[in-house]
Amino acid sequence: MAVTFSDLHTESGLKSLNEFLVGKSYISGDQISKDDIKVYGAVLEKPGRDFPNASKWYESVSSQLASSFPGKAVGVSICGKTAAAAPVEAAPAKEAAGDDDDDLDLFGDETEEDKKAAEEREKAKKASSKKKESGKSSVLMDVKPWDDETDMVELEKAVRSVEMPGLFWGASKLVPVGYGIKKLQIMLTIVDDLVSVDSLIEERLTVEPCNEYIQSCDIVAFNKI
Image (tube, rainbow, N blue to C red; front, side, top):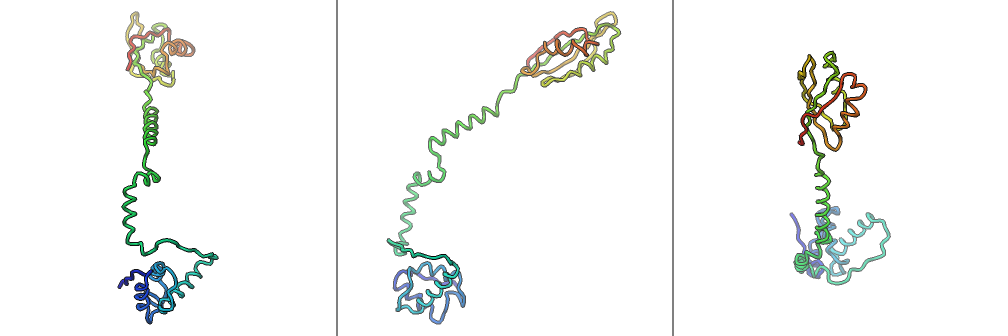
Protein backbone atom coordinates (compact mmCIF):
# COMPACT_ATOMS: atom_id res chain seq x y z
CA MET A 1 0.00 0.00 0.00
CA ALA A 2 1.38 3.40 -0.94
CA VAL A 3 2.64 5.64 1.85
CA THR A 4 2.16 9.40 1.77
CA PHE A 5 4.50 11.93 3.31
CA SER A 6 4.02 15.67 3.18
CA ASP A 7 5.93 18.79 4.18
CA LEU A 8 9.22 16.96 4.68
CA HIS A 9 10.92 20.34 4.78
CA THR A 10 9.16 21.07 8.07
CA GLU A 11 9.55 19.62 11.54
CA SER A 12 6.07 18.12 11.45
CA GLY A 13 6.88 16.37 8.20
CA LEU A 14 10.17 15.04 9.56
CA LYS A 15 8.39 13.90 12.71
CA SER A 16 5.93 11.80 10.69
CA LEU A 17 8.83 10.28 8.71
CA ASN A 18 10.74 9.56 11.92
CA GLU A 19 7.75 7.80 13.45
CA PHE A 20 7.17 5.79 10.28
CA LEU A 21 10.77 4.53 10.33
CA VAL A 22 10.56 3.10 13.85
CA GLY A 23 11.86 -0.48 13.51
CA LYS A 24 12.46 -0.01 9.76
CA SER A 25 15.64 0.35 7.77
CA TYR A 26 14.01 1.65 4.58
CA ILE A 27 10.70 3.01 3.39
CA SER A 28 9.38 -0.11 1.65
CA GLY A 29 11.36 -3.04 3.02
CA ASP A 30 14.79 -4.26 4.03
CA GLN A 31 16.55 -2.86 0.94
CA ILE A 32 16.80 0.56 -0.61
CA SER A 33 14.23 1.18 -3.33
CA LYS A 34 12.90 3.94 -5.55
CA ASP A 35 10.60 4.93 -2.68
CA ASP A 36 13.64 5.79 -0.57
CA ILE A 37 15.14 7.86 -3.37
CA LYS A 38 11.89 9.75 -3.84
CA VAL A 39 11.57 10.58 -0.14
CA TYR A 40 15.28 11.33 0.13
CA GLY A 41 14.92 13.92 -2.59
CA ALA A 42 12.17 15.67 -0.65
CA VAL A 43 14.23 15.93 2.55
CA LEU A 44 16.33 19.06 2.28
CA GLU A 45 19.11 18.00 4.63
CA LYS A 46 20.03 15.36 7.16
CA PRO A 47 17.43 15.36 9.98
CA GLY A 48 18.74 16.50 13.37
CA ARG A 49 19.10 14.57 16.62
CA ASP A 50 15.40 15.05 17.36
CA PHE A 51 14.64 12.61 14.57
CA PRO A 52 17.04 9.67 15.14
CA ASN A 53 15.23 7.15 12.93
CA ALA A 54 14.99 9.56 10.02
CA SER A 55 18.61 10.63 10.54
CA LYS A 56 19.86 7.03 10.48
CA TRP A 57 17.80 6.31 7.37
CA TYR A 58 19.10 9.47 5.67
CA GLU A 59 22.75 8.47 6.35
CA SER A 60 22.14 4.96 5.01
CA VAL A 61 20.61 6.21 1.78
CA SER A 62 23.35 8.84 1.41
CA SER A 63 26.11 6.26 1.75
CA GLN A 64 24.55 3.95 -0.84
CA LEU A 65 24.01 6.79 -3.25
CA ALA A 66 27.60 7.92 -2.76
CA SER A 67 28.87 4.50 -3.86
CA SER A 68 26.77 4.77 -7.01
CA PHE A 69 28.21 8.19 -7.88
CA PRO A 70 32.00 7.94 -7.43
CA GLY A 71 32.69 11.41 -8.80
CA LYS A 72 34.12 13.96 -6.38
CA ALA A 73 31.44 16.35 -5.12
CA VAL A 74 32.37 19.92 -4.19
CA GLY A 75 29.07 20.70 -2.50
CA VAL A 76 26.01 22.56 -3.76
CA SER A 77 23.79 24.99 -1.91
CA ILE A 78 20.19 25.60 -2.98
CA CYS A 79 19.07 29.10 -2.13
CA GLY A 80 15.67 30.77 -2.12
CA LYS A 81 12.31 29.22 -1.40
CA THR A 82 12.19 25.46 -1.72
CA ALA A 83 9.50 22.95 -1.00
CA ALA A 84 7.50 25.49 1.00
CA ALA A 85 6.73 27.21 -2.26
CA ALA A 86 5.56 24.02 -3.95
CA PRO A 87 1.82 24.74 -3.67
CA VAL A 88 2.37 28.00 -5.55
CA GLU A 89 3.79 26.21 -8.60
CA ALA A 90 0.42 26.46 -10.31
CA ALA A 91 0.81 30.25 -10.53
CA PRO A 92 4.01 30.17 -12.62
CA ALA A 93 2.35 27.57 -14.83
CA LYS A 94 -0.53 29.97 -15.37
CA GLU A 95 1.89 32.77 -16.15
CA ALA A 96 3.65 30.53 -18.64
CA ALA A 97 0.33 29.87 -20.31
CA GLY A 98 -0.25 33.60 -20.53
CA ASP A 99 3.18 34.17 -22.04
CA ASP A 100 2.82 31.52 -24.73
CA ASP A 101 3.90 33.88 -27.45
CA ASP A 102 7.26 34.54 -25.81
CA ASP A 103 8.01 31.00 -24.64
CA LEU A 104 6.73 28.94 -27.52
CA ASP A 105 8.60 30.98 -30.09
CA LEU A 106 11.71 29.29 -28.75
CA PHE A 107 10.25 25.91 -29.55
CA GLY A 108 9.02 26.36 -33.08
CA ASP A 109 6.19 28.92 -33.25
CA GLU A 110 6.38 30.64 -36.61
CA THR A 111 7.05 34.33 -36.78
CA GLU A 112 5.78 36.43 -39.66
CA GLU A 113 9.22 36.21 -41.26
CA ASP A 114 9.18 32.42 -40.93
CA LYS A 115 5.74 32.21 -42.52
CA LYS A 116 6.78 34.46 -45.38
CA ALA A 117 9.93 32.43 -46.00
CA ALA A 118 7.91 29.20 -45.92
CA GLU A 119 5.45 30.61 -48.44
CA GLU A 120 8.27 31.65 -50.74
CA ARG A 121 9.79 28.19 -50.53
CA GLU A 122 6.43 26.62 -51.28
CA LYS A 123 5.91 28.86 -54.31
CA ALA A 124 9.38 28.02 -55.62
CA LYS A 125 8.70 24.33 -55.09
CA LYS A 126 5.41 24.48 -56.97
CA ALA A 127 7.01 26.47 -59.77
CA SER A 128 9.75 23.89 -60.21
CA SER A 129 7.37 20.93 -60.00
CA LYS A 130 4.90 22.49 -62.41
CA LYS A 131 7.27 23.50 -65.16
CA LYS A 132 5.22 23.52 -68.30
CA GLU A 133 5.93 20.54 -70.43
CA SER A 134 7.08 21.47 -73.90
CA GLY A 135 4.24 21.70 -76.38
CA LYS A 136 3.52 18.77 -78.67
CA SER A 137 2.35 18.64 -82.24
CA SER A 138 0.64 16.00 -84.35
CA VAL A 139 1.95 15.74 -87.90
CA LEU A 140 0.63 13.88 -90.96
CA MET A 141 3.39 13.29 -93.49
CA ASP A 142 3.49 11.95 -97.03
CA VAL A 143 6.61 9.97 -97.89
CA LYS A 144 7.08 9.42 -101.63
CA PRO A 145 9.15 6.64 -103.22
CA TRP A 146 11.35 6.94 -106.30
CA ASP A 147 9.13 4.83 -108.54
CA ASP A 148 6.72 1.93 -108.66
CA GLU A 149 9.56 -0.53 -108.14
CA THR A 150 10.51 0.88 -104.72
CA ASP A 151 9.92 -1.67 -101.93
CA MET A 152 7.35 0.15 -99.76
CA VAL A 153 7.87 -2.24 -96.84
CA GLU A 154 11.55 -1.33 -96.75
CA LEU A 155 10.65 2.33 -97.21
CA GLU A 156 8.47 2.26 -94.10
CA LYS A 157 11.18 0.44 -92.16
CA ALA A 158 13.63 3.17 -93.17
CA VAL A 159 11.23 5.87 -91.96
CA ARG A 160 10.60 4.21 -88.61
CA SER A 161 14.31 3.54 -88.14
CA VAL A 162 14.79 7.26 -87.55
CA GLU A 163 14.81 7.76 -83.79
CA MET A 164 15.13 11.07 -81.99
CA PRO A 165 14.27 12.31 -78.49
CA GLY A 166 10.74 13.68 -78.67
CA LEU A 167 9.81 11.83 -81.89
CA PHE A 168 7.04 9.23 -81.84
CA TRP A 169 5.90 7.43 -84.99
CA GLY A 170 2.23 6.49 -85.28
CA ALA A 171 -0.16 4.78 -87.66
CA SER A 172 0.52 4.58 -91.38
CA LYS A 173 -1.06 3.48 -94.63
CA LEU A 174 -0.23 3.25 -98.32
CA VAL A 175 -2.08 5.69 -100.60
CA PRO A 176 -2.20 5.22 -104.41
CA VAL A 177 -0.71 8.13 -106.38
CA GLY A 178 -1.01 6.91 -109.97
CA TYR A 179 0.80 4.82 -112.54
CA GLY A 180 1.09 2.01 -110.00
CA ILE A 181 2.94 4.19 -107.55
CA LYS A 182 1.90 4.42 -103.91
CA LYS A 183 3.05 6.81 -101.20
CA LEU A 184 3.39 6.19 -97.50
CA GLN A 185 1.19 8.40 -95.33
CA ILE A 186 2.30 8.29 -91.70
CA MET A 187 1.35 10.00 -88.45
CA LEU A 188 3.94 11.24 -86.02
CA THR A 189 3.91 13.16 -82.74
CA ILE A 190 6.75 15.50 -81.85
CA VAL A 191 7.83 17.48 -78.81
CA ASP A 192 8.19 20.95 -80.29
CA ASP A 193 11.29 21.94 -78.31
CA LEU A 194 13.11 18.78 -79.29
CA VAL A 195 12.17 18.05 -82.88
CA SER A 196 12.07 20.26 -85.96
CA VAL A 197 10.05 18.68 -88.79
CA ASP A 198 12.17 20.47 -91.39
CA SER A 199 15.35 19.10 -89.88
CA LEU A 200 13.80 15.65 -89.62
CA ILE A 201 13.08 15.67 -93.35
CA GLU A 202 16.24 17.38 -94.60
CA GLU A 203 18.78 15.78 -92.29
CA ARG A 204 17.36 12.33 -91.62
CA LEU A 205 14.70 11.15 -94.08
CA THR A 206 16.08 12.41 -97.40
CA VAL A 207 19.73 11.58 -96.84
CA GLU A 208 21.57 8.27 -96.72
CA PRO A 209 20.61 5.60 -95.98
CA CYS A 210 16.90 6.51 -96.10
CA ASN A 211 17.12 8.20 -99.51
CA GLU A 212 17.67 4.79 -101.08
CA TYR A 213 13.89 4.43 -100.82
CA ILE A 214 12.62 7.98 -100.19
CA GLN A 215 12.45 10.60 -102.91
CA SER A 216 10.73 13.35 -100.92
CA CYS A 217 8.51 14.14 -97.93
CA ASP A 218 5.61 16.56 -97.63
CA ILE A 219 3.70 17.83 -94.58
CA VAL A 220 0.00 17.20 -95.09
CA ALA A 221 -1.21 18.43 -91.71
CA PHE A 222 0.42 19.99 -88.66
CA ASN A 223 -1.63 20.48 -85.49
CA LYS A 224 -0.67 21.59 -81.98
CA ILE A 225 -1.78 19.17 -79.29
